[in-house]
Image (cartoon, rainbow, N blue to C red; front, side, top):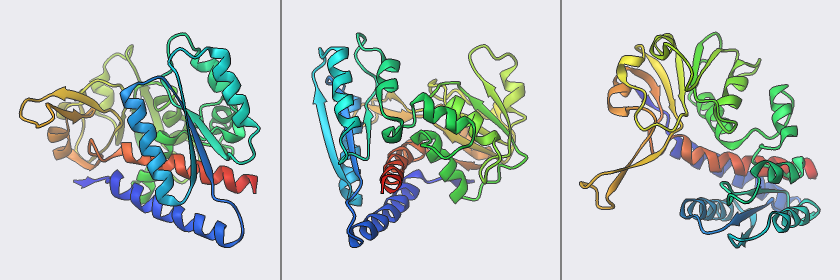
Length: 291
């Protein structure tokens, strides 16, 4: 069993990006500049955005954090986005989700300039991704592709089963891995809450991508020997034996599934760290395109 170490791989990618930034500066160009808008005081969102700001500092990016109150109107938020769209100093920006209930997520995503949409959520970029055209691939799927590539996990001709059909992970992964690309050329089955005979399907899989948000859902009796497992889920479970009172688990019952796996991602330390690294990579790409 080989661990797909997202923490180490993400650190390697950040070092590579830092070298690229140094090259840009040495050639008289500006550093990439990433901005983030966060609305309200959601603890998880604040933690995640702060991690992004620290990552920017580490690789030499400029970063701007715009914190807006929970009760901001949708129109006011759209105005903030419009300002960033025309700011030539900003190469890319994100609006941290989730947003308060009175704000339409899709309307906000649609308002972002696709050329600055480093989250890769705008329909223009999703459409280009589906057509295998150059674009911003959303950070989590991008990170999964990079992990598979750097660990030389063969995908061509393999049967991939994707658990979950979200617009952020499941749907794009099913498209990307079926495309004619280096990490692709797979036969893909997407499963979801209405899928029948799920265990029969997962037992056929060479590669499983679990992104359904149900803690430890995928068990050892659902996978065949030498399977590759990518665990996208992360959930806090109460655990009185831990000092902080909880433990983090994924969508995969790691202890039992890892015994049958050829490759598997841990939780934490697998897909999670890759997401921020690939957001930085998209921002670098946006800067290079602008230049």
